[in-house]
Image 1 (cartoon, helix red, strand yellow):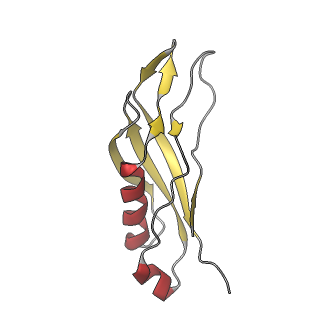
Image 2 (cartoon, rainbow, N blue to C red; image 1 turned 90 degrees about the vertical axis):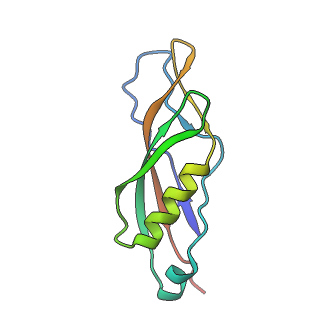
Image 3 (cartoon, rainbow, N blue to C red; image 1 turned 180 degrees about the vertical axis):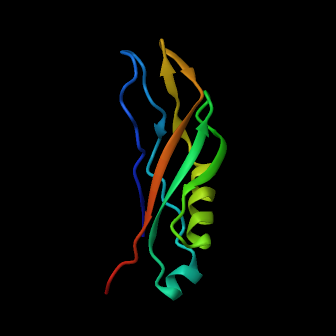
Length: 106
């Protein structure tokens, strides 16, 4: 199971809102990673546009496993966000999205 939480630094002026996922981002766990028992945390930097779509996404901090990094970026690129707001208007901004890949123990 992969888990996510949007990192939001507060330090914004009053009335400002940081972009956040509209719903939890749940990347598909890559089968090769499951077979090999790979787990890890990926931090994806995403440029969220004013309409809530992702204009760009890249790995900011790798899990150490390319297959997990790629799955995290793919999931963030297709996610929908609640856009950031400044002065009541939606604006584009970069956000960091941490994603954990944790295998269920049986």
